[in-house]
Image 1 (cartoon, protein in one colour):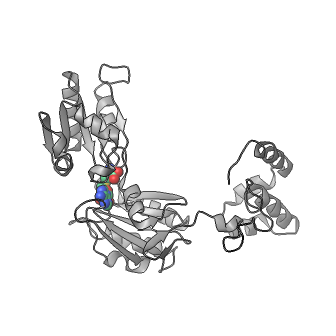
Image 2: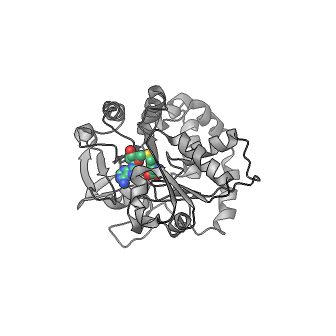
Image 3: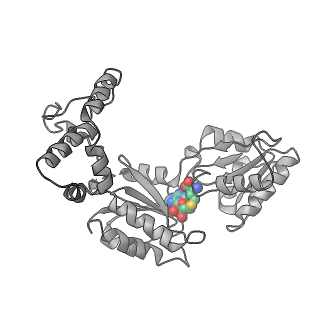
Length: 323
Ligand code: SAH
């Protein structure tokens, strides 16, 4: 069992994670995580491994499972998020294992650092987000830098995992440099250390000061998008309701918008406007530039009959009740 134990407090571990550890004969994990579940370990074989022995852990788990033992391989957060689930499946496949084999595998999901840290600072993930690990131990820097550049440009809310360690101190500076090419210097940033653990610490800052903060191995850095704000010590990313409803008035639908239907700037409305602009003489190249989209995509959209899309939306809207 690949068990995600959550951010590090009992209250935030799932029922299934506790049960999985309770019913196992062998518990394998990094020393810190073993300590976090110390009260569940009586009478069990416990294998404490160091940080860099990930593959060893998986190999050991498989060997024990083949002896007929129930093994819990524990990871902090979610075992599948920069955790043991991937390496374990790789070791299993290498050993000729298939899902039909004698050894059963279960991944027990847990609250990942991104969820834990977001909950502590407010509601920063209420719109599209992604995570990037700044660890270059197994990933070449240009790959990491390209992803940072792409998500900074695409205005995602971003969680930076593994932002800094004793030896890796420059990666966060480079991440800041790449982000500042696309984002405002005053973009809100939350630096969350040891979420739901003893030394928990939350610091709010801005993108231009991000790398000056106290950041370590147990820190996750949350960078807001262009709409994210901090108010009364809470970081919030708007869901987009203000685009559709009058939030300060009677809550009615804004002019030109309809409840349960795509925005006037949603796909259909946007297609209609795009066609009108093109008919009025705006070139494909100019439209591509203005909408920051590839010219061949604009061209393909212009060739799609809008009536088809409209009919589909009409038919579907009678079945849907989305906001
Ligand atoms: N599987 C884990 C992530 C392992 S990578 C998960 O799903 O959360 C290790 C990184 O996770 C750390 O460098 C840090 O960025 C983040 N992290 C893990 N626990 C954390 C915590 N309690 N508070 C803040 N960040 C944490």
